[in-house]
Image (tube, rainbow, N blue to C red; front, side, top):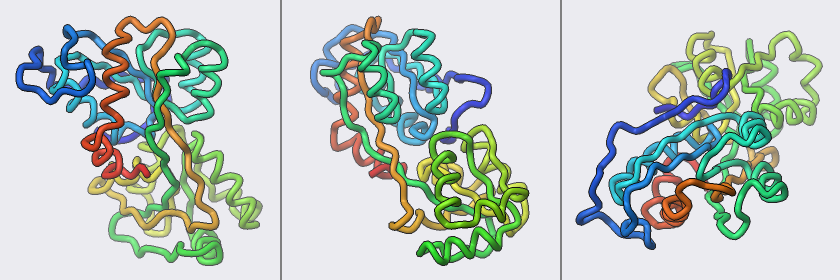
Length: 264
């Protein structure tokens, strides 16, 4: 499963392995002692590479069935506005702040999951540009045939970064903004060897082997991290299972999976 958000609204992702028994399973909190429940999660697309394997692990350990819907930060906010039901929300901290303020998420249940930085990628086989400093990144962007990134939260930052680098005006005709990370990665994979892409590091890592190569994170002076938190939704239909899943996200096993996907 690739890390992506959906341009045409949310899409469901239901892992195929669902175990009905928790006999002999790893216990975390009270989750393994609960009767099997159907847990609904809505998550930011940038988190998919980490959440997908964690959901499978959680199902195997708890016996719960989990459905996840992924979307961009604006899609998450829109879903909250329309009060579409879910048990757990995993979203950028700013989106969760709004959800708590509006009474749509339970504040005491909130957990910090991690943060995701922005990285650079190119077509597989293309020369990797030097992006180790603001100066070298500026040169790489100016040399690129196209600069590709999403219209999501990371893409909004790229717009600001290009302005900071003083190159936005020179790149107007060469900027390619697409709906989501998977589309951006596919666009660069099918593009030229001089195309340059920006995106969430989790999404870039998840797409490797499909036509793109991860170059490096943005230089420290320009790096932008998006923090992601999780919380139980107000009115959750399976609040105990939701609490168990959030607790699972804080375990050492889950932390290793999160870090492997590119979260800090």
